[in-house]
Amino acid sequence: MTVATSMLILVANVGSGIALARTLGPTGRGILTAAMLFGALIVSIGGLGIGEALVYRSGRAGNGKSPALVTALYMGAAQSVVLILVGWIIVPFLLRGRPHPTADLALAYLAIIPLYLLSQYPLAILQGRLRLVEFNLVRASTPIFYTAALFLLWRLGAMTVQRALIASLASFGVASALALGASARFSTWRASVAEAHQLVGYGVRSHIGNLAVIIGAQLDVLVLTASVSASNLGYYAVAISAAGIGSLIPTAASIVLFPTFANQSGEAVRRTLARFLLWGLGGAFVLGPVLVLLVPWAVVPVYGPAFAAAAAISQILVPGFLLRGGSLMLVAILRGSGTPLRASVGQIIGLLVLFTLLPIGISKFGPEGAAWAVTISAAAGFIWLLVTALKYGHMSYGYATEIWRSDFARLRPAPR
Image (cartoon, rainbow, N blue to C red; front, side, top):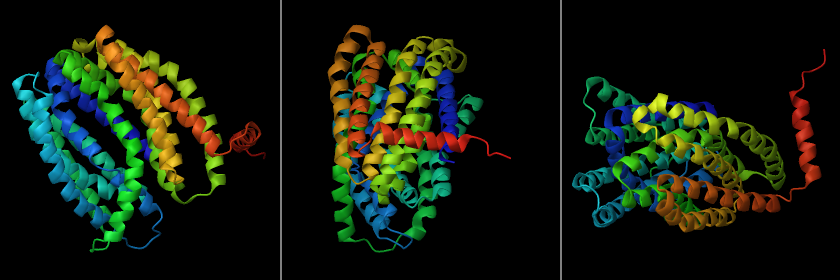
């Protein structure tokens, strides 16, 4: 179900990418990317890992009501005020070299901060409770509504950067209403100071790694925003949209792995690691070369001839997104097992490699250099996380082989 929903989200994201690319062109697409960057980045950095803490706490809460959601919403209101003020201070400074409308649009898009928290905190409750039907419906609502709004604007010939931003804000408003309605029955009406301490305690430990992922996921776009033209930024945004298919299945798997492992034994960790080596890495080994060839070929037919320059960039990014997806699975296992710091170290390593390589790559090769930096840093983080997970799970070749044989035996048809 989660993989199917992720595929639906991917289709919606591709659809929104097509609508924006064919109506705004490379320059308009680049301006939109810059305008949408900072609100999402600020709220992700300032989230303090409360969303992950909600998943973990909800996964251990059983079937009863908990004060976790209402406590997190009070915290989210305070977070929103602080983060919007921070955005009003830093966004004009960071965009001082861009065309004038870009900064104004980015400031207006800071409205995403409270809407994001209002949708993500209830969504985390649904994920932690493994209410996967409601969880997947809510998380799919944002890209579906956004894409539908963009296609309507396209059909009416009314697409502008400003209206695309309004459509994005409206889609998060819809998701907020749906998420609150679906999760309210799991919450008490009173906030709890003790619960706040628990959420902050787990969240901050988890957020150390989150910061590495959040910054790493946006650092390339952030540096390109400050150093290349709007059209080059538009090419890179389309390449990211196309290459994102590589992380589809691993991302969906990590969503389920995290809450599942919140209350599992060490033996379950070993079994899943063994299966990850077989099905996860084996699937990536088979799928990777296909995507490397297919994704660049599809860029021009899908997004239009104006984005031909994005094809080569996407070819470099596909392996990086596959590796990032594999890292998400390993992080979910480690966090769900109650060891978020182990996961955080691997994420920090990937960020440090990216931070080192990104300026060099962009200065020499532009957007393609940024893509190489992303892929190399993703490989470094994945290798560290894999080695750490194998050590933590006390994995041996003999044990892994036994699990693999058992899995293959289940695939054989039963004798008549």
